[in-house]
Length: 231
Image (cartoon, rainbow, N blue to C red; front, side):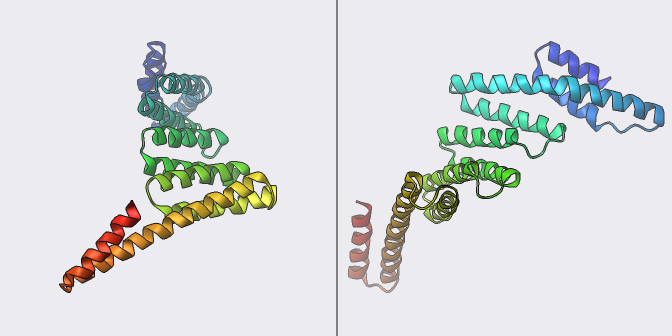
């Protein structure tokens, strides 16, 4: 039986193969009533006995690899935990949101900011579905995603997310709360960065146009402005 193989791999501490055979066992579709009863019993055994202990093992391994600063391995163990939640038909829980938050965090440490932002936003959506939009955890995840986009130089997307953070925090905390004041200052700073970026882009495009028109003096002047803005 596939469940026997899954349990055997678990006792051998080969947790990945154990999960693989759990998936195979749960994917089996019986052909008759007798085998259907047997299959349901096998499914129950896997869901109730094996998957929860595998979940604990992967959570512990994630923590160990985080401590060792092996963040890529920690990400893999987070993904395995999400696999188990899906097998348990638990599609949207705080546990899955935490897994995506952790993946975002590890990707940030690895300077994989696009992936970090992606997982922070998934986490935010789950919290939003669970508790509504005006929620401190939604705010925190969108803030984390905004920071990742800021690292990528995608200030436009960062501004969009920081505006959402400000909207949520104003609703929850009020306009004069210290966190809301910090939100505003943070948003203003990134808006300024976006304006500076657009200014550089404008000078660069003007320089390109001047070059095409053989207005080389104009091109030089605009390229100098680009350099000046960078400095």
